[in-house]
Image (cartoon, rainbow, N blue to C red):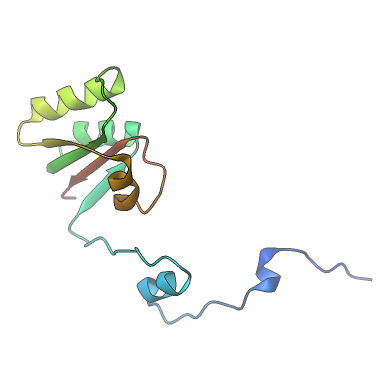
Length: 115
């Protein structure tokens, strides 16, 4: 006798292949989903932001959560941003970064620029 596989896919209907990702995400409960235009670069995470700043790409802003003190990796990112010139460093609430990253893990850092 064959075993019935017990996984989540058995309980779901197949997804439609119409290619409308935004509509599909909203129908799955992701109402705050926003598309990122192709001409924008959004990177989040401590090491990813550091590498993005070192890459030489055009960077507009670096968002960092309000932590009250600047030390370690945070200090490196702030100093590197200042050295590049023209990069705006904004200290924001954690909720703002959560929204900008669609609630992905951001480690308190987000970089916004051009690819």
